[in-house]
Image (cartoon, one colour):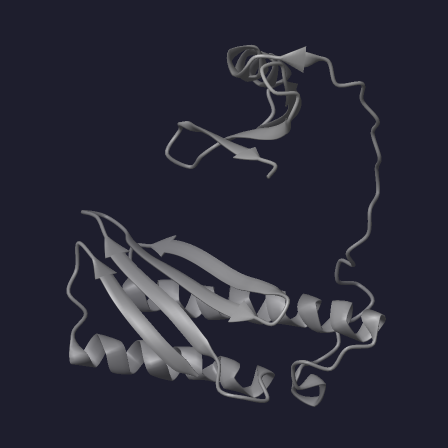
Length: 172
């Protein structure tokens, strides 16, 4: 695995780079070819954060973990990525694809969660402004809200970002 490391509010030392490379190399067994992963390390006064992003053929595997200790955060990130790769493996098997090395990923036992749709809802979307959509989302107490924008009749997804601000995803 090729790692591109970026430090935000922290400089990545050679020792830190070696430890992170060693920990993340545990994921090499999941891939046929050398993949490129982006590792962003950031620090605040009390926490260390590691974000690992691995682009795959049909998607992205991503992990973001915060902890007081950087190396513990790296361990947690590797565990999270391994879980996601196992799920990805199951999805690929169901679809009949062969993109990652299946023999190196243990199949989840029957007691682990399987991905399935457990609920469906249908809505009639009345046109509304973005401000109206924010109000509706807050009244419902949800983290996201799909609405049809009155100005151009486009479907949009309004969501609350981790920093507490709002974001909108628009269709093209």
